[in-house]
Length: 69
Image 1 (cartoon, rainbow, N blue to C red):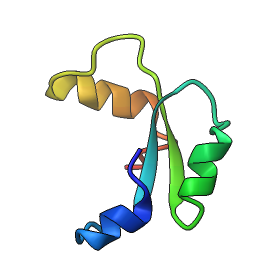
Image 2: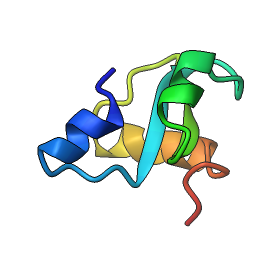
Image 3: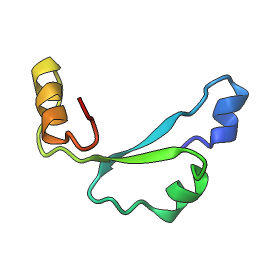
């Protein structure tokens, strides 16, 4: 995990943080504390591969609460 200050120092602005492979909406305290000034979105773990355009679109459709159309 790269702290926000280090990213800003090299010109990368954080608009939102995705908690990859999250199994619940509960985030570890260290993640919540580190990125307290950014929007944090849990990114659900996929039980199948999401490689390829079709698979990604199916994943987005199944998780439309995170990825509104």
